[in-house]
Length: 147
Image (tube, rainbow, N blue to C red):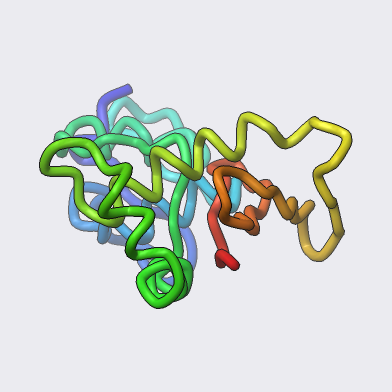
């Protein structure tokens, strides 16, 4: 899907070229399954959550398998910085480490010892590698916090 000359047809960025929409909004559209319409250059239309990954790819952005909230990064840096120092890969920063470890924890979500609650979506509390990962099940799962 080509995003060049595609125009957002709804909300905050109505009338804006998709190529000018901030990256954070594209990620939000994917995570929240945003169904707002985008007019494509060929005259057809598509939903924003379908267009956003193509625009991210055009920009050279990697669509992560899991997102990590700023709150989770802050909590981890307060409580588990030593674990990061001991287990990180060469030149792996804290955020990238959290994405890697968060995905590892997420892969355990169906185990019988995992606690699940419901809010707007399903929230999983997964103990993995000495850390409790609180992950919300969205289109792109989000690490909300850690304990």
